[in-house]
Image (cartoon, rainbow, N blue to C red; front, top):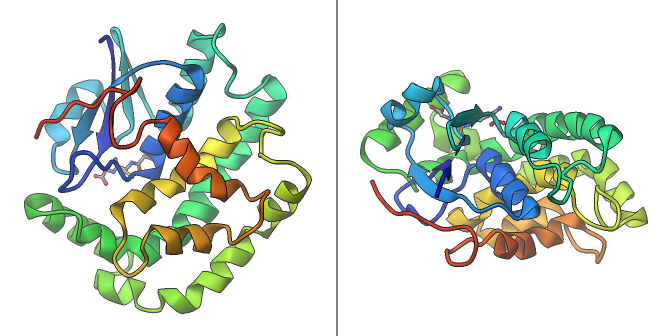
Length: 243
Ligand SMILES: N[C@@H](CCC(=O)N[C@@H](CS)C(=O)NCC(=O)O)C(=O)O
């Protein structure tokens, strides 16, 4: 297959958990484009260096290498205009830029400190050492367990930051309106933390943390979307296991 997607994994190559990689996986599924998954680990920098990248997602499409989830979404939209639109027009593309930042700075940055210690438990060897060192440095040298220690008391505050989204989703089913579009995927990507079954905060807890109850709640769609994008293998999104 000419299309390949490098996705971050830990000890289990079948469980990609990066929210950014999930955005791309969902975008590919939306466009109905197949891609071979290349499981990638933090310390495998050499595998992506030839494409001038230190991070994933990295999409290889024929002889083109595209890095950064939002740039990839734009690339897919512009390269495959006959496929279902990710943005629903230029206004949607412009709004998705805001949602992308909201996803990065509010949703992912809000969840990350709560799950960071659990992520380390899904890594081993050099990956574990690299993750611990680099992420503890991000938190001013604090041990990851200390960063996550007060997470239960932080959940309520985090959920409040999602109130604008919740209000929106009382009036419509998705950020994209009656059907999901890339705006939804920028936010739902955070559900990627879920399949790792983060320690005491298992999938169900993370779901509750994100959305709470309510039929119109977009976050309730995460499991359905993960099925759509073929988490666990099979179907259109082929998985390729290697170390
Ligand atoms: N803005 C980028 C962020 C990508 C990113 O931060 N990827 C992380 C995985 S979640 C990564 O590859 N990190 C490599 C490292 O920390 O060395 C995007 O949207 O794709």
